[in-house]
Image (cartoon, rainbow over all chains, first blue to last red):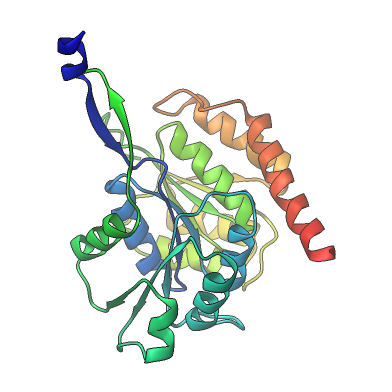
Amino acid sequence: MDDACALIKPVANIENVTILVVEKDVWVRVFITDQLREHGYTCIEVSNANQALDVLRSQARTDLLLTSLRLSGNLDGRALAELVRAEFPFIKIIMVSSDPPDAALSEVLDVHLRKPFLTEQLVREVRALVPSESRPVLP
Amino acid sequence: MTESPDVPQTVLVVEDEVFIRMVISEYLRGCGYRVIEAVSADEAMTLLQHSELDVDVVFSDIEMPGTMNGFQLSNWVRTHRPGVDIVLAGNVKRATDAAAELCDSGPLPKPYEPHFAEDRIRRLMAFRKARKKG
């Protein structure tokens, strides 16, 4: 029995960790989501804040919001982050922009990533914010 | 069209309705396709104009906001990316049936029957409608 228990190793499973990516530049969005999926994450992609809110207010699972500051439409990334922080306090928020955030914006974010950034930096931040689910598996 | 057993075929899903795009893309990934998403024909064009981006199938809605609809996109693809297959699907049922058909020749088995995808899309859209009314 002890030998059998020793063989069971916990394995991190990030397959269901879901990141909602909000980005209006299609090339940037395709690149980032490609990279995140390569690292095992599930991504939902939208191009503006209204679509993001549709997803967040639905039954679809979202663990983390990754958004640009500049978005098209009537809501920018700041407005989206503020709404999400108020309505969905358990969802982690990473914002990407060229300039550092002001104090008010920093309050609503978990992480700010300054452009340009390496994929590795993004993945590190995601891993730190959203612990992967672990399940024991037999080898 | 390149056919390498190690490289998944790539489907470009072009759909402005977020719930259809989300569910169809997830479905196609479930049967082993690499899926790239575009929210409009304009975005699709931006991607497709770069011939170094490998796309095997364009899976597109018909009516979408922007300067082009699915028919116009389809005509552009036939002229400028002749090796690329086109699937047009103008409503939820056609989209889920078409996705299931693509999955029939996909690298992996269908993740589930298409009516589950259809049900999921309809539920998501109905829930949103109800939330907006209330």
